[in-house]
Length: 173
Picture 1 (cartoon, helix red, strand yellow):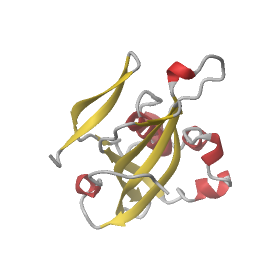
Picture 2: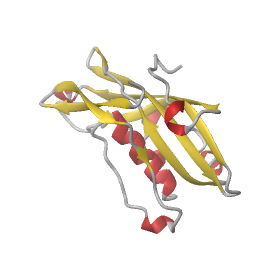
Picture 3: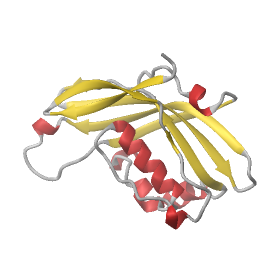
């Protein structure tokens, strides 16, 4: 069903797929200080929600911290400048099944965003983000590395936000 999505839940070391209605992350146009703080790395979708929450609140160092260290944009200041005209971002994520391999877990998460710009215009983008983490059962000593973003590819879309979410994603190149 196009209107239904799945959420990956990590429970007792097992991954399960639970149905969840499509959820758009929305915040008021009010002062960024009134936007609630969200920092959750429990699922790939939660990481993306936290990332765009940081963008919406102007907390760019926090947003940058959701990238895996080897995959973060090389020039932080140039990356921040890319958001200069962004007032707010709405997010919708789709389902993503884990792709485990040799102690590593990868997800390719379909998503769409609607960016509201400082001139009042809105732009919709759809695509996929790849996220990664080491299998928690295989980590025996610090440091612990939570789920982190590796790569993302978004393309402009002429569809409404919820319809711009791809049905599925392959590996993000």
